[in-house]
Image (cartoon, rainbow, N blue to C red; front, top):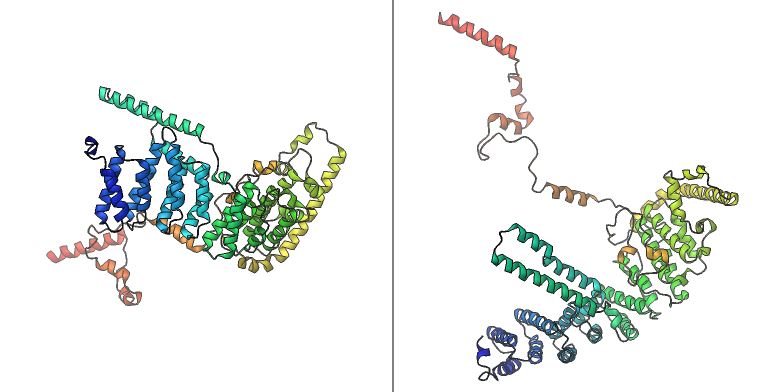
Length: 581
């Protein structure tokens, strides 16, 4: 703490501490080691030690088996680098530290490499090192032989989009009070010089935060980490090769599949062996099958030939969209087919499979019919000629909206003088007749086969959790209507099933018990003032067995009316009066 007063005498003291820690960090006492690190941090804060020398030492100290020390060093490294780049980028120091971290990722000590990777990821999320070199250094960790290192890097690319930084910035905004709140609070309190100065300091701090955020938003481009990779094709091929040859845990394999699919979809890569590999896991009984369907849809794009996608769609149709499965399974399969068609219109082919999917628009289950209608809207926007004539709709008219309006009684405008073409009206009537006949036939067939299919549906339940989306008809997004897919497929687009599933007995019982917690007991209040006091014979008789009291009840006096009591009392009083004479 007093070293800055003796700069000439203690010029070599920081370097001695650094050299001592670098040579003997493994055998030093933990308390002495952490005290020396704190002393170096104090001298670094007073600019008595170069940042590069200290930070390189701290990366070496990550090898120590001391969790408290590693946490302290991790926090100081991030804070120091962030402060160095607060006003302007220190490119020389940043470049040297990035090169050193690249060498630390190859360190034989797994914990040191893992902590170095965590530092780079945290600096990227805090928008300090948000450049191409940082991302490509993290790419090398995705191909590491250490499982923990690879899993951390893969999760970074799956979750390091701009949504994370937006969430962090929004949380920072919530912690910082606004200028309006400060002014209102100062107007309520008593006016003093001290409070006035405090208000001015707080307002200046709020303005500085706003300027810093505005400057950061203007200087930092809004790019995802996937766009900054130098060679995404090579990265996807190496990841897929390791996925085929190595046996990892299921969660890690699913994350690697998701990363490969994002690389293929964002950069429009060609990886033909990926689709048959994923198709092996597309079964309703598969764990996290909705995520696998999302991975499949994410990996499709315009550059993939239709011959590669058609077997995938056929497998989804045979495995998911069948009457043997539950309604949720069929709806999820239709949603997955819709996402694939959205990203790869060439997969429509001759429309045979598409027409089979669209035929479920009149299904009795609402989830299935909603998914089929969303697919119908997409086909109308892309290639309406592949549909049946009755499903194409009129040019410029949404057929589903027209049907809903007619069902709600809004079709009374026909009598108000509007003129229609007779041929169009005749065609509409014929189409409606065909639809009614088909729906009647379908209802008859469904009634006959409903009992036979109940047992099979119970066996083919899908192992996935449906998001709580609700009972909405907004299944068709604007992107789907325009035929322009989003860059990243959302899990809600696949698992969006408009159905309210019933809770089982355990869930209902759990909700009932949760509602009873903290609630006063119902029923009559106990007349006893002291809960530990004894009870009367009358209360004890209520708890006894009836057979014990059956003989005694013959001689018990029944309840008398007020008149009977009055007569008995008069007789007793008269008898006593006579006896006294």
